[in-house]
Length: 246
Ligand SMILES: Nc1ncnc2c1ncn2[C@@H]1O[C@H](COP(=O)(O)OP(=O)(O)OP(=O)(O)O)[C@@H](O)[C@H]1O
Image (cartoon, rainbow, N blue to C red):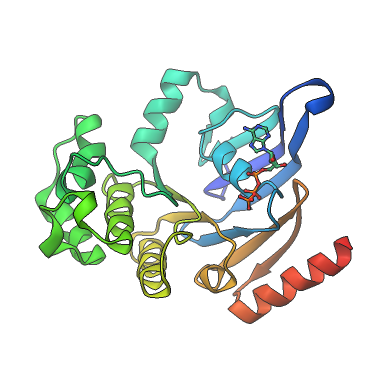
């Protein structure tokens, strides 16, 4: 299956649990995330944002439907193939940083290359370290870094393998506004300078304004989208959705 989009879903449905306690987190989601673009996913709490991100990133299984990354049907891969695919082709940034505490910043950054038994290209690694502005903190452990610095290490780690798609789940949720701007600037740069596709879940309209477009979810369905968002236009759209739901 050839597709122009970097990431595509058809009929993506996800339910948790069974019987009366079953929760339908996503219903029949058809979505496309354009190549080399930065897309934000927004929506009220519980609307299915994290579930969508986890399903398209191969971190969770679907109940129905399909997910393609480029020409690869993720739903057709077994667990081992999926692990290798995620390691080699995707990057992840989470709200909680998820760095290994006993490793230095430098060791955390190159870990994905080591896991893939790929030799770090010193020039490339230096370029990424430079882009994240951490050259003087590389020998520090995560506990010796600020939250913003830890998240920049996590971004460098996500970018070091040159992934096609970077998935970010509330990457600025635990950061102050200055650190948030640095991390969002990095994600923007990875789309603009490296042609990477970025898909980010956020609650924050000013974070979404860094994206090329915004996909709005409500109650497990895609209900709206917006190109060229600004913080104000995103906020207006959210208010309109809230009114429509009421
Ligand atoms: N592991 C799980 N088991 C059962 N229900 C779950 C599980 N994970 C999520 N859900 C439910 O699925 C729905 C969507 O959750 P999800 O976390 O994707 O929403 P969200 O939009 O990311 O929310 P938030 O903004 O609060 O993080 C919610 O009703 C949630 O309670």
